[in-house]
Structure formats: structure tokens, C-alpha cells
Length: 157
Image (cartoon, helix red, strand yellow):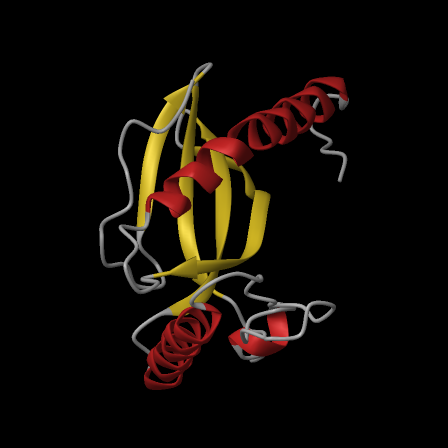
């Protein structure tokens, strides 16, 4: 059970993929992450370092200055792309429906996922959706159980 459809190589907030599992229709959508923290604020060790006890340490050995210069240039390019909006952080939000009725519009989610990251084909977005699928199905089954347990004409929230 997984999404056979995959997210495109370039995505925008609102893009979605759909799959069927156990009679449910599951939609995985890209939602813009509203946290405005920059990549270097989110990831300890984002910037390369020459200091062995520092996050981002590039490691000892021959050519460490060249490796550091390359890593520094890559980090700067990634930051510039983020500032320009070439890539962004998003959430993957799964909703679940049964026979056209949405049971849970936010059955499972994962946030701070990189979308359109330089050099990426966005496969990480589909992988995240697939990892969230069991949680979304559990949420849908829980909603169905509550609905079935409610007396006729009464819905428990």
C-alpha cells in the first residue's frame, strides 16, 4: 500500500497526489510551512566548519581547505536559492475520504520538508507521503469507529 503517483520534479503549495487503500481515498497535499526560519536556523551544522567539535565539521585529511571551500559555496548557493524562493519548506498533509466523504482533512502530516531543493527530484515528498499513509489510515479507522458507535442521529466529536 503506497502512492503509485509521485510528486513532480517542481511543485507548488496545493499540489497533491492521490491513492486508494483499504477502500479509502487518501490525498497527500503540499502545504507551505509557515515557519520563516532560514535553513541555517533549522539545521545545526548547515554551515561547514574547520573546527572538529563544531557542527558542520568537514573532517580531517588531505584537501580539507578545498573541501571546506566547496562546502561553503554549496551552502551559500542553497541559502541564496531559499532567499529567492527557488525552494521552500513545506508540510505533507494527508486527508482521508470514504465514498466521497472526507473523514479527516488532516489525518497525518510531516513538516519542514524541503521542496524543490537544489539537485533534488522531490522524491522525498512522495517518500514522506508513503511513510504517513499508515497513520492516516489509522486516523480514518478511528473516525469510522466513533461514527459507528454513535447513537442514530447523533455524531460524537
